[in-house]
Structure formats: C-alpha cells, structure tokens
Image 1 (cartoon, rainbow, N blue to C red):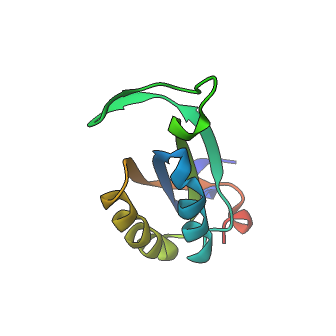
Image 2: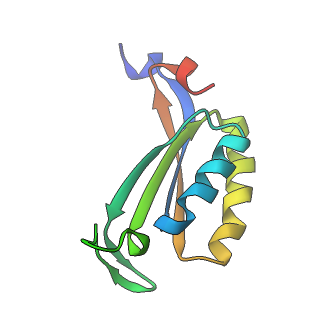
Length: 107
C-alpha cells in the first residue's frame, strides 16, 4: 500500500475540559461522525496558563482530547457546531486534512 491508495478525510481534534466532553462527542456523532477517540488527562499551556495532566482526586479539572475523522463533506457542519461551544468554554479545535486506509470505518 502507498499513499496514493489512501482515501482523503478530515481530522477534527478538540481539547476541552472533561466536563464538556459528552456535549462535544454527542454533537460530533449527531452530525455524522461514526466514532471518536477520547484521551483524558492531556496537559499543555495556553491562554489560561498551564494545565496539568491527570489529577489524582479531581477528574473534572482535567483536559480531554477528542479526535474524530470524517468525510470532508461532513466536516463543515461539525466545525460549525463545535465553534460556538468554544465561545463559552475553555478549549481549542484543530482541523487538518488526513488520509485513511480503511474508509469504510469513517463513511
């Protein structure tokens, strides 16, 4: 298999507070994402300063990275739905072209 055999898709990555994960995931799925990957306890530095990874006694203050891959035709609706959520909560969204070897998993 080579890169010419891969199918173009769009990858959407969203970092949000763990309290907002259920809303973001539900929106993604309601707008055509067949699934997502959620990674809890991510750390980083942004507009709100440093944020630690997994906290020992308080999972509500942790950040979660949610990743989904969709056919390009579905990306605009998901992006448009998530963007207003980020106006009211701490978080960031990354969108990039990607390619997959098993397109039937995503379409």
